Image (tube, rainbow, N blue to C red; front, top):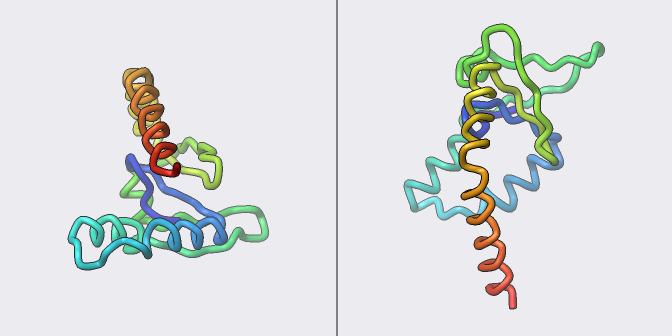
Length: 120
């Protein structure tokens, strides 16, 4: 578990977290402050844990505070991990997605085209 994007708690299976570290965090140049801040966003708040006998995870207080979680939560699947949200933050971000999706979709298409051109 770690601080996720957009004030959520990111929960990763260990193998996926290790892939994320290897591909996304370790290659960052440690002599650049932006790279260190990005890496530390994740690594300063890591809590490794196992599911208990009743299928539960204990989310530490500092992650609950970061995500603004007080009682009820929304859990969302994110393909290779899941995120835990306060209901308020989830609703706010869901509304933001609705507003920005058309522009985001176009930008993502342009990013894919750029990446494909770089690969050839």
